[in-house]
Length: 286
Figure 1: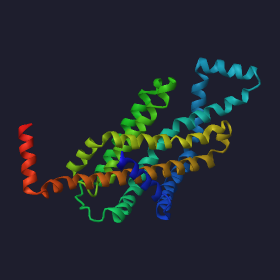
Figure 2 (figure 1 turned 90 degrees about the vertical axis):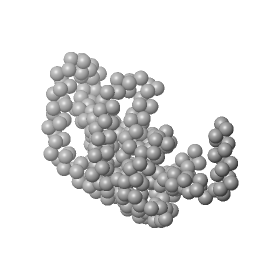
Figure 3 (figure 1 turned 180 degrees about the vertical axis):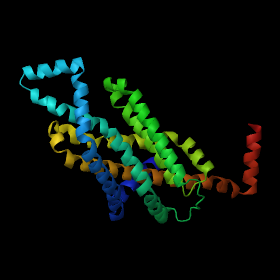
Figure 4 (figure 1 turned 60 degrees about the horizontal axis):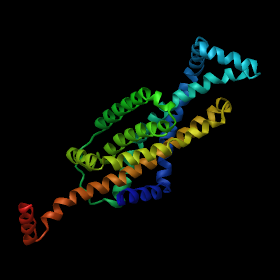
């Protein structure tokens, strides 16, 4: 628990550094350009296709007729765009996470290592190819889990547990690998993820709840469609900054845990011979 809270406060403090704030804009620029390009190419066809699909659905047609009867027929024009935005949001979250992991994470690990763990030996147990496979594989599994658990979202208690649990698992899988790629060997990384799996998942889930904040932007309802060109970059930046904070938290936690792991054999080896013999004798009697 001490390591969990210590790494949290350190990550929070590092977020105020100009270097970290500048790092949050690098993924934003890339994702903003990508979003504008996709919006320009596919928005109209996607909205028209979704409107056609909704019109063919008998239940939605009944809803549209009811809206017309209460003088709210104009809402049918914004239903498809709003639904499309909600469908695209999970992809935006995953892309934000992966872009932060691939672009910002190496700089964050260097920053934390230089300031706190300069003496920690680098054993290079990870690689960019491994990070790529880990990120894409975990992202696909997370998206599949979200799709399979959609019915559970209709149950009020589970809707606030299941999505953050999936995002927490995804975030921990991606960021722990990148946080330890340079400094830990593969065996050390596997051991740390085994020992600290629940705390790492807790960090991921906490970050997942923080990642729900951009969803409040779309609470403006129909105006979200009109303001989408402004709201989408804002949402992307918030997602990016949340994942920057999460990457700092995972890095502080993982490198501190790695240093503690490497200190364990050293602590045993430096005990006086008599004390080691006493421990051995006690262990044999037990």
